[in-house]
Image (cartoon, rainbow, N blue to C red; front, side, top):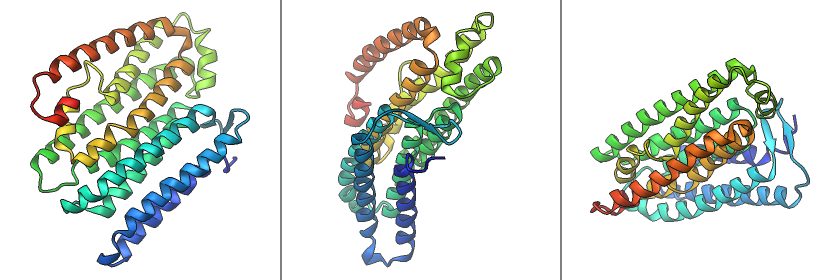
Amino acid sequence: MNFNLASPEIFLLTMTCITLLADVFFKERFRSLSYVLTQFSLIATFLIVLFQYKNFNQSMITFDGHYIFDSLALLVKMFVLVMSVFAFIYARDYIRDRSILRGEYYVLGLFSILGMFIMASGNSFLTIYLGLELLSLPLYAMVALNKDSTVGSEAAIKYFVTGALASGMLLYGISMVYGVTGTIFIPELTQKLHVVLPQQSIILLGLIFILCGLLFKLGAVPFHMWVPDVYTGAPTSVTLFIASAPKIAALAIVFRILVQAFPSVQVQWEQVLVVISLLSMFFGNLLAIAQNNLKRMLA
């Protein structure tokens, strides 16, 4: 167990708990401290990750094979942190002017970023799924932070229901793959898939469900219908956060699962992604023409 490799996650979790306690115990006039602590947490975590990246020599696996330390994980973490810093800078004035709960906003955002970190370093389906849920659950609450907005509450419910459905489909696909290969670790899975030819149809079926879960999270066609409603109903600062950092983390698990775990069936998932990419660009631009709401048009 090499805890030094996971020092960004450990530090970020510690600072998130400190930010939560500071918001609870300090008086109202010190409430801006939660914003200062949040930005300090993100910048300090970025420096830790940058130090790791500069001293990076080779990929390492720890925590019984569930955590991988490689250049992909470090790059994703740095991009997530940079985007989150700018999202919170914009959010500060926005949530203050609209009386949205400040401390809760920042703490939920930090927990979501921690989930992105865990996803980026996931070396097994278990770690990736835990990171995905830790990323998603705070976002459901952030969408509904403006309690006086009925549109925001509706958007949060839609986001929660579709997110739960996507997680269920992802888990179902993982269970199929695990049933055939007997492993949830990505390196072992890659090796075993080269010899599991008789059950390849089950592997492909499991891959379809995994793809459906991932495409739900990415908001790609034909799993895109929740995106305009959520982006419109959420506070603009939350929309900015959802549309930036989590997309990079989702891209990281697409790399982990498809490129690293399923190279033996690359021909199949590559064709599917090409078609979905074309449809997403075509229908996204076509439907945007008819919108009169800026956030809905961007979604």
